[in-house]
Image: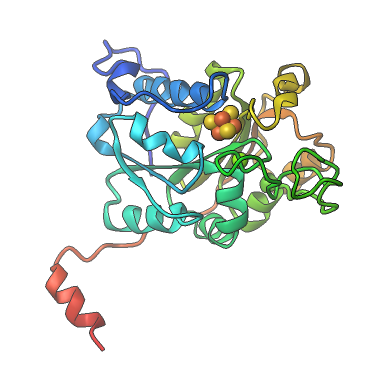
Length: 282
Ligand code: SF4
Ligand code: MG
């Protein structure tokens, strides 16, 4: 279990800059992901986590470039597979703080099955999803969180006609222990949610409404739509579901803080790689 404090009062050793790499992000000017990067480094600095004790795993997409822009151990994996990679890492190295980053297409479409089971396994990791309801890197197609009447893509000129999924409902149903939503335009709030997500034991989902200013320019209007209604987290699942029934997609804060038992795989340190290869040899 993580017992890291959020309000560290001792003289800080690590500043937010210590978690940044020298690589300049290639995101479009105004992209919400800049703010998430900045919030992440701020949260890690608040927690005073040594960079070499943190690993950041991502999938594929604009937001999945995140590890390259940090000084953390990073793994830019394959589409939709960040969560299983992170699960394996946490199983082998339970001492590490494991973070996962990606977008809505990566995490909820290609990686949808892994998302379900990561919530269910409830392994101690924090999944930051930069949700812009579009596939940004491939130039603007509808994703699983796109509204059915969005006509901004030539592939779906009359909209998809398919209802968007609700990631927080899925996470709550599947067993995630900490579920929050925040908005990239409020970086201090994003940092606070990341901080709380890391502190919470088990699987934490943080949905960040992160505008894609290039393919969804109307998302610049999110700042007028978000409202911090979930300032008090609930610990009762039924109550959390009731909150979601009234959700307009723009309520922010901690939706749910549960008490599910995290799964702690016990790594067998006595086995070498050669032993493992022998065990799995056909
Ligand atoms: Fe950000 Fe959209 Fe540009 Fe990707 S395409 S970097 S999500 S603004
Ligand atoms: Mg996206």
